[in-house]
Length: 165
Image 1 (tube, helix red, strand yellow):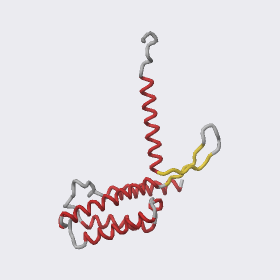
Image 2: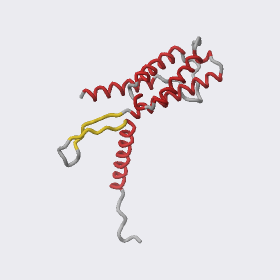
Image 3: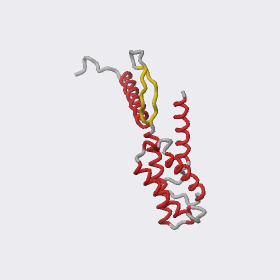
Image 4: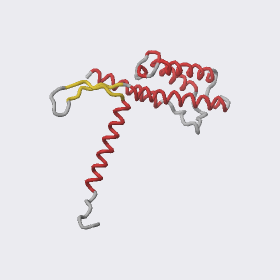
């Protein structure tokens, strides 16, 4: 029960972190976004990365270090600015691309996070602990959904008539 509660808290923190990325599509740069919001968001991420928690433990150290380096460059670009619009166009694009890269890595960190559950095997009374990544669980749900939809489609399709050649 405690591990489930911890997993739920971690998932909530990761989702909140991801929701805090409003400057993300390369084609649309939100020039009115306040720099202090971006800095605050990056500080939360940086603290998790340095503490190697909330899924960041599943990301290789090299990628975590790369993220910290990108954040350092981002802070240099944003220093003394009030909004993204205060940057020149080249720096605006670099900021947008850096935030997008960080968002992608954060998403991957959440996808790589392991969730362990106690499961009873079909046809058995034995209970085992099974650990899967969030991403593999998502893919498994999608495969199951697709299989169910296919089976439903087959059950509605009339069988070919025996007399037709």
